[in-house]
Amino acid sequence: MASMDSMPAEVKSAPSAVQQAYQFAVANPDVLKQIPCYCGCEAMGHTSNYSCYVSAVDGSEKVSFDTHALGCSICVDITQDTMRLMKQGKTVPEIKSYIDQTYSQYGSSNIP
Image 1 (cartoon, one colour):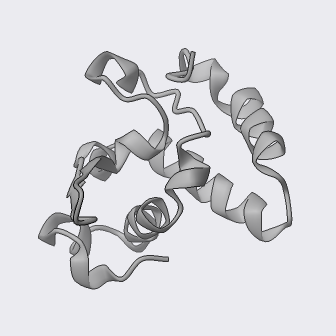
Image 2 (tube, helix red, strand yellow):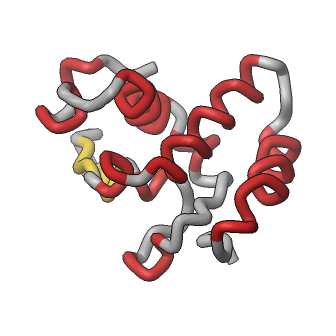
Image 3 (cartoon, one colour):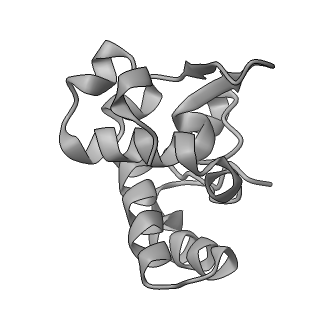
């Protein structure tokens, strides 16, 4: 989990589940870039669940945050499920399959 020190004020004042999701996203881009989101955020240009939290990382590793997940429970739920399944030892393909099965009822995947 990434430190809360680098998080924007809106994240620091968010509920703990949202804070944890942002911390996880920053610390695990390799995982969340493979996990889709189903909230409709592909219309905003999001390409994975990671995009719901991080809009860019520059050459000096400075993170630019996306505030979308602050108000989207589907994004946060997907990340929380990913965290839980990783702790259970599931692989990324297994987690993606679970996310696809669980959340596809809400819309289309933002990963082609």
